[in-house]
Image 1 (tube, rainbow, N blue to C red):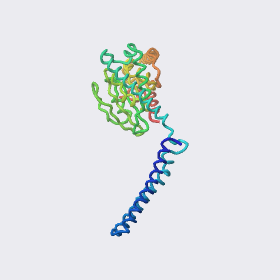
Image 2: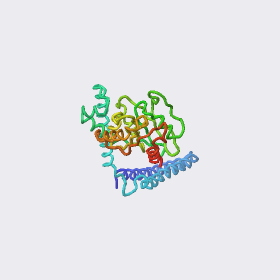
Image 3: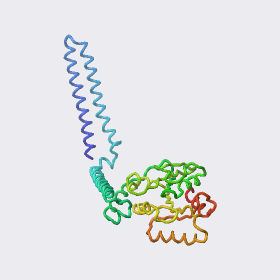
Image 4: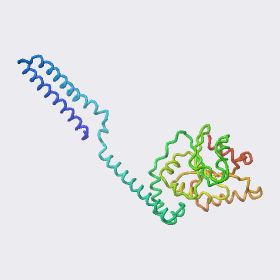
Length: 304
C-alpha cells in the first residue's frame, strides 16, 4: 500500500471515530438536558448529534471507496520516484534554457547573425541549441496538413501562395511584404507565409522551433543559389527536420543554360552538405504551366 493511500484510509477512520464520539457526546448532553427544564432543547440537540455523527460516518465510509479511483492498483501512488524524475527533467530543461539565452546574448554581443557563424565560433553553442530543440514539443496546429514557405525578399513567395491556392490572397510587390507569419487556408491544408529575415537570430527561439516541428512540409524557396537560404537550412539540419527546395522564377534562366543551372543547384546541395533535402523542384509560380511537370509533381506531393 502506498503512503498516500494509507493516509487517506487513516483519515477516513479518524472521521468515523470522530463521528461516533460526537454523536455519543451530544446524545449524553441531550439526555442531561432532557431530564431538567430544557427537555424541549434536548431532542433537537440529539437529532443534530445524530446528523453530525452520520455525516462523519459517511465520510469515513466514502473515502476508502474513492481511493481506487485516484490510486488504482497496481499504480497506487507509485510516483515518489516518478516525481523525482520529473523534477530532474525540469531542472535539466531549465539549465538548457538558460544556456540557450546565454547563447543568444553572445550572438548579439559578437554580432553573430547566422547559424554558420555560430557553428564556426562555438561548437558548444550549437550543441546547446540542439539540446534545446530536442526538448521543444511540436506546435499543435488547427489543420491536419500544414505547409510553410521560407524565402528571402523577392523570391516570389506571395506569387507561389496565390498559385497554389488558386486565388489572389497574398499581397505581391517589391520588397518584403510579409512582416509576420501569415496563414492562408487551402482546401485540404493551411499554408503559412514566413517573413524573410536579414539574420536568423530570431529563428533560434523556442516558438520558431515549435512552429517548425509542427509543420507537415517546410518549403524553402530560392532563385539563384542554395546559399540564399543556408541560414534557415542549416538550422533545420541541426534539429533534424526535412524540407523541400523550390527553385522559383526558373524562366529567368536562359533555355540553353537550364540543364547546367539544375546541376549547379544539385552540386551546391552536396557542397553545403545539406542533410534534410527531400525534393527539389524548378518552377515558375507566375506561370505554372511553363514547367508543369515539376509543378504538378510538387502540387500532388503537397496536397495528397
